[in-house]
Length: 350
Image (cartoon, rainbow, N blue to C red; front, side):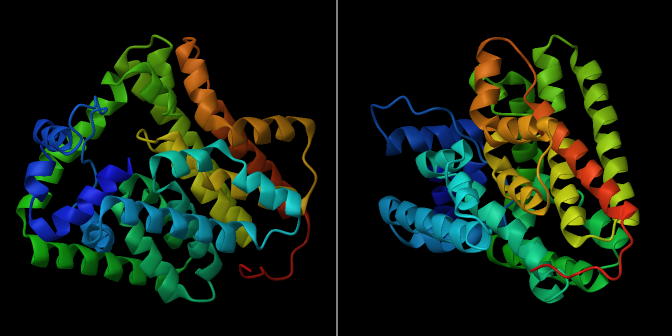
């Protein structure tokens, strides 16, 4: 999948973005690039300002770009996620996650995405401008930032909110200035529709990589309308739980962890390789208190959600979202325990 990212970098310089948003044309380009190999169909589904982030990688060949990308991801995952953990076993667990293996094998952005999310948490109260600018960068994957505005408003982090808004406007403005309006039109017409098609018309392995209530309800045989209704119901429950935690619990980590998990529940378009952040969330929880038997089961399932979803799908069994839903329940339990204990003042992220 790094081939997609690299082509965003190439398009930043060669002006081919409009053509790449056309699925058939883009796959024809890949077929010419890799002749004689039946490469799986790919698509461009991210907004045009993604090219700004990928542009430096488009200046070097594919192999060098992949090596730099992988090195940055691994270094960031160690420095930001693993190293601050208290126990070496926890650090090892982060690097043993199957989702990290997907990052290494496929060149997904999952490690950099997780690093960005953790960096946001660490800077929310210490460096609100930095946190806001990182949030702006995350708009290249809009499904991951769905609930961030709500989170910032309910927690009163207005400096972060306006920094994120300003950064987003600057990114989109730069994209329009450098690449024009046409890539955005193609994205809104073709790119988003490709994501909708992926939700229901993919092969069983791809569907297994999507741990959402909607996809799993479709796999269970529900009509698409009923599946979306089920997804919406669960999403509303997750948002309700998030709202309760934000308004009643003053613990910054539990607030942010709930934002992350609720977002992964709410979005109907989610690939399991983007759940790498869940390993960090759970290990941070385990540093605070020992897991119950049920929480231990949730931990094990969520750590392997990427291969678990595929194995279940290949056997016609839905259920991968239960791991993420279980983690939301775990966070609610932790927040209830936290609110039951008299608090002095919330501590900023470390």
